[in-house]
Image (cartoon, rainbow, N blue to C red):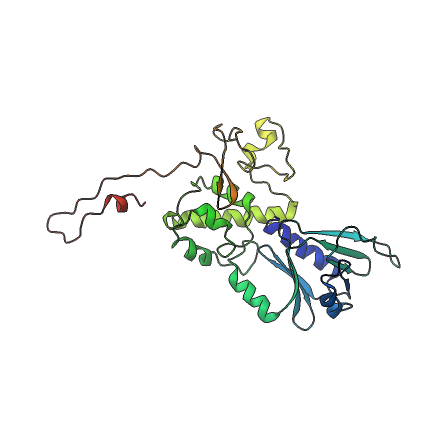
Length: 300
């Protein structure tokens, strides 16, 4: 499934190609035909992204809401003035045709027209998006700091944090040297602030380059004298899809496990479990405070 930076790139692409212009809308597949007919020939006002959701704005406070899901994809094409768009190839849910270009949407999880009220309700269900100017990281922190779920699970929960997928999850936790199994409520605020700032920078770079690169300058192939990574994901990473390979930092083998239905990648040495001290604190003479239990003492 595309991560948030891809959806923000799609929003920018739609603005560049169609914003401020009349757009012909159709549904060659037929499943979006009635909805497309309502907006056919209207001017596209703009586009925006929130997490993995794309919104294409049209007059009358109407938006086409798209969630690509696992199989969804947009394909763009151009044609000369007075020409025709390319032929429809495959099962196309939505075709958009402007003055000199077209876009085909195939296989989305969601493609629907929503009102302003429906759009606002969807935004309200999503966590802050590191790529949006209106994002408030404190909203995510409030949920993380009260949760007994692992930080790895929480970063993938779109209600907590919107737009972060498996790649950014694994890489942000590695760069923070944080055990992915650590409970959210045990993560320190300064650590969360550092993760958020890192995601803002990494995802913005993903928008710029259209690929996910997370390694620091000293760990690039050129700096380390190693072969570039070969993977359909592209980009240089520390742990994502590097199971059994040596960590670029410590040479330990990268591990994998299934967590909440998704593969989790991490380095056991660079992301160690927190040391636990079982000794209970003894209350001072005359104190009315009871000694902390061993379980409480272990919470750091």
